[in-house]
Length: 500
Image (cartoon, rainbow, N blue to C red):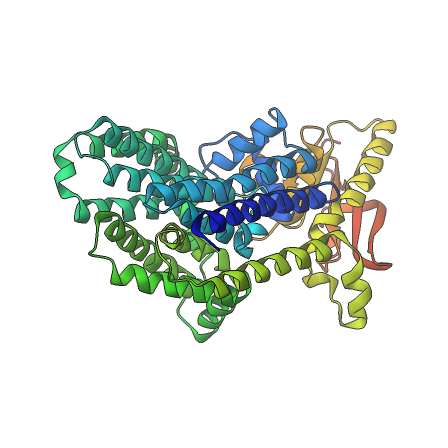
């Protein structure tokens, strides 16, 4: 097959891959609700802040935009994220072209990013990782384009300012975007120090700082709540251990899969060999190294680290994939086949009742996070019925409380502004600022909502109250009960010193 014919074939496969992935994501979007973390990000829409305990505020702004100032519906959010996720491989392909890849090379990058399980499956939801991926690739593409331009040219100025915009917004999406900014600063100062005699790098730094200034000011004013939460209060059991090493390695094998990991190793080896060949190769190698080291350190140190924390370290390698033949056709086909198989498995697992049916007694609903996407449709209907019944009894301004942020988030995302939502969970969470316990605990009636993941007695959780009524619903998949949700109406017990 000639080179033009191979390129044409790659175009056909790339377009088909995008269409198939879009249809698969939309198929999931039409029948599922929010995951627990998604529900929290959707809840951000009600509380505009520069940052939250877990992340900076860009994901909240996106949720607010999609919901018109309120939490978006799961369908609206998932249709939007399906389209944005479709754009990620194409942005990666354009960034690779800016780094010097041929058209065929850029299409290989597109196919890699299409079928990489960490992106094909992981970017379906309303999470900060979706805008982070788009902005990270954009920043790398702009940096490569700037290095390929004359230092004092208008093209270099615009591209460098684009780096500043992308890095600033990436850090607003997720704090790890700051690592990208550090990596590109270190790489550019090493590779193209002479460019610091122009205004472009300083303009990029200024743009990024302007974008980040609301978050910086909020953190300083509030006592660094996000940094303290992420690096201190949630890291009580942190420390290097064999358990963390096994979790990190196992997570990469599961989320990235062996064929893609082998391909990444081959691309990294080629990039290492060519690191002194040209400015773009040096930039990609140095920035990848500066990103990978702290992310790997954090993943190995933190007991609560998740496999996708390390994901940005692969994105620089994706750009170089389009510039090298290090990954042969056989391995490339193996990657696409593996990625397609993972997507098919995820579609079947999430969208059908087959897992509970086929696994039988070996199926453990508690550990299947796909149930999170199905539980709160019946759970929301139950809560609506209870609220409607209480309204008929003359109760106004209800307070709904959960035992953990994962339940509280689902409640808030479903209810929007229809009811106040508080949280009686362990540790600090965003609900402590939105509706403090000191406020909701004074309400006469509290609707306490929990599910079968939490073994607790609502009357013991709130001992100053008596149980007035209990309503429940069961979540079924494959003919099996995978979760039970209870709504307990607790009435406050007044003593003689209280004014009822």
